[in-house]
Image (cartoon, rainbow, N blue to C red; front, side):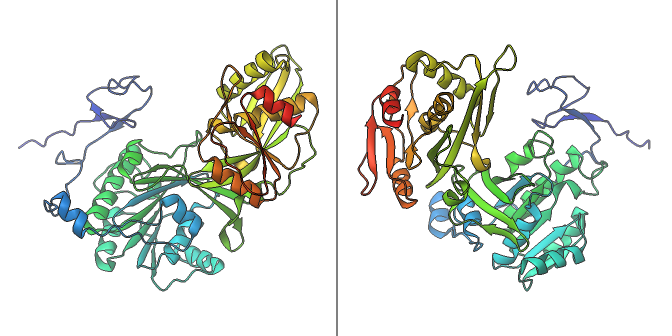
Length: 448
């Protein structure tokens, strides 16, 4: 009997659909250059279902008997971003640039969480991990380390150890024997990701998966990997500086607005208890082009400095460069600044920077941004003991914002004396002078 030939298909790295021939653009999701050659394993099966079919339960039984208690790691900044800690059976994907501290944070969490943990390090030897744990001062009583990178071997060790948690460092170095591609290939990442998910959901084990990122800053591999997992975390920061920001891009069990702040030290990732003081530590309060804005990151207000520089354009077309703020939003604010307030910036290069690597997406920062630009253009400093907040409309009106009470209390705690805020929703805070304004013009009269 003749042996059946193996047919090659083309798999889309974005949507996961396969096609019998190559296309420049995926017919399903319309993305360009995402089809990769894929040879299904012998037998024509890409993956097997879970070993045991999950029982059929009513929603009432799950709500009554289900155990939704979270396991805290003791690292409060990590627990904050996760939504209170790890949930049983959840899968967490942690991404970030090389050298940013992903493995360090994962090892600290594995040692601090309290349950039995299997740390799978396919990139480093067991001795290297042990030396790092010693440097971090991490307890290794309940942590087992393996350098296995073959999924079948990892699954066997999980069956023997029965850990409550396991760490995969990293998903791009793990491969399964059922696939023909090399580790890190799209098909291997997808297949191993599905197997990790099956183990977690069937055994109730929690997994932390470390993922490499591309030059665009997104986790390498098929986009479907991010859809599979429960939580996607990104560790951000500049390797030339010590501070790191942990953000949740996706969280099925908590908010995606929380931010964890860490400092990279010789003893590992040290959590920063008071980020506001850190972001304002080197601020020059009498410098033109600087304004302080109380940003709301989830449930926690963080005061950040917004810097702006307006200078004469060196070329015919003025530059608009932004770090940590939306460029299109800045263009709108500059138009309001010219049209409603008469501050001409159309012939000036404008640079805006949110200090400390923070990224601000909320419109509540409008007043602080436009005031920093005007301060630089006028060469007149915003009072150093003043915080600014408020959304700006195209008519120049100052609109109300959410969470104003918490922002004002944080400003008062850090020693600020004045606040310029929208008229609606403002409540008095003892020891903090409030200047309520209906328009940006009124706010500028109070500031300058």
